[in-house]
Length: 253
Picture 1: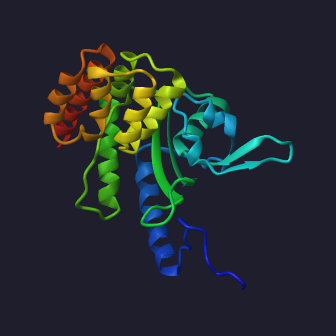
Picture 2: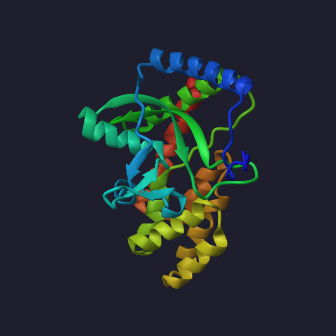
Picture 3: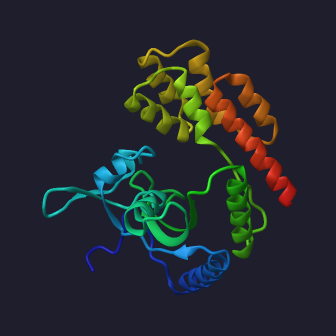
């Protein structure tokens, strides 16, 4: 072969690792099935407009894009949750469903170092189930699955998109501006987030509250810190939801 190298961020899975991966998949399949999750396998290609037009839009910079024979823009699956939601809405016709999957997702932005552009995921989706109890159940189940995989020393990080949405309500950004800021905050890139907020004319406490988000993590003390930043009802409700989830998980042990 003239070139045996692979592109940055991808790797071959060799026999020993493949055997370990197969064993882990079998363990999780049994776990998913015993808890009532039905398996699905989403398509690897999606129309660009399906993902770009979503409320939970995937950043365009993340997508591997290509053109179909009819000229339409396609992407390699960058997010499995959105694909599962599409399946449930268009193929299953269900308002409520418990689905599980094992699938690759592809992230163009990653690559090199310890990150990967091709990530094999195992996951569950509880569709149509809302509220703190359902959330706590899913988180507790994820902990059981991590233990089933042999992990013992790990941290579960829980967030709530409603808090961010509440802060954004107070500053009146356009959808494009809000998406730009969200992307920066998710990357903990406060420098570019501040630049975008200044460009949009956001200043004072409203800007500082958004920029405080990347550092807003820790234990239960974060609840009071988050409440101190805003009186927005949507954001406050998000904190209350997280408090209830924390209480339920504590009761579950």
